[in-house]
Image (tube, rainbow, N blue to C red; front, side, top):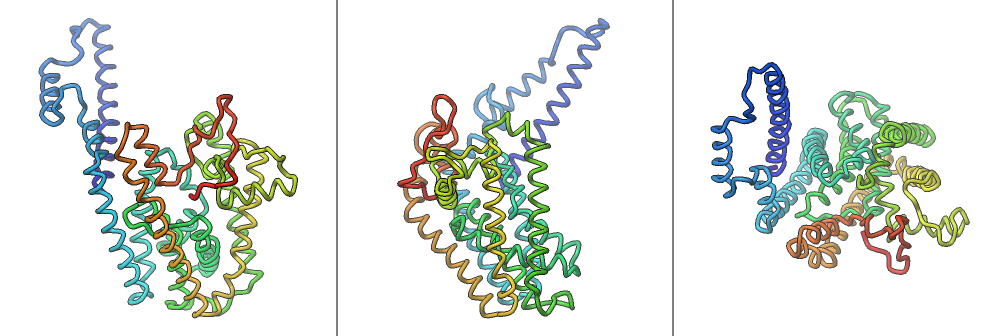
Length: 401
């Protein structure tokens, strides 16, 4: 929160300062042309005050205050303190969610909104700094938006309830084992990923088994539920393609450092579902033996659109069965949470002990590489050959993201 506030204040101050300087310089140029102003850009007394304040705060006259604050925030003691605070609030958050589900299930919708909105806003801020903000157009965030809209705007809509129930209990809940979400308390990024995929499932669980009013239907028809869910999913897919392939296409093409889901998945070395899809496409002869995924090609985009549609359709199959059985639904939710815990334990033992210390060693480039390793981010620069093409993935030992 402190990092977010300091960054926001610095950003606002920078924007306001730039506008003031631009207006002042325009006025100065206008007055100079008219011969009404001497050639003095900044009054000497203001410059002396600025240097005095900078030296008092930063210790150097030529060091900006916001640069000094940003540098202090990246020092190892401050980073460790922030991680400890994240761990504390991560544990407290899990405890509060458990209390809400067990003691106040009829009011869990309010708890859900109180948790998910600050987490998503904070993720937008952090991902914007990493140039990953296009991730927030993904399907899981749109489902969370729909759930928040249901709580705040359309609480009596049975149609929206069915769609959100199907998406949250199907694709989002099963994304936990698919994308190896890990309950790592000190990592705000991993805790947010767990909450983004698990809180909507807990929200619709409480709506189903602890309803208020007559909004919840007694039964779900399989064909009706599948039709509504897939129609809503296809609407999101069309919206996503319009944004990334039409509106922001030139912007994304010119800035390859901006990370999107398909760029993340298609950057070698392949792992998880990307590795399976790559091998499947080669066996089906859709792709050549040495052909790699290219995030900018229409062929790769079509493959991943079809694969994601199939994944969504398959993960929607158990939804109506969960609606009918309280015990089955409880077992399903508990299983997803146990997978989160197991992945978190594996992360602490296998990855964290090695990668955490690296982010405090070496120069700025090495520290950033270690930080991205903790996120599990692919290195698009390292994956390219000298001629600009992607290097072959290591399919024998895939990287565990």
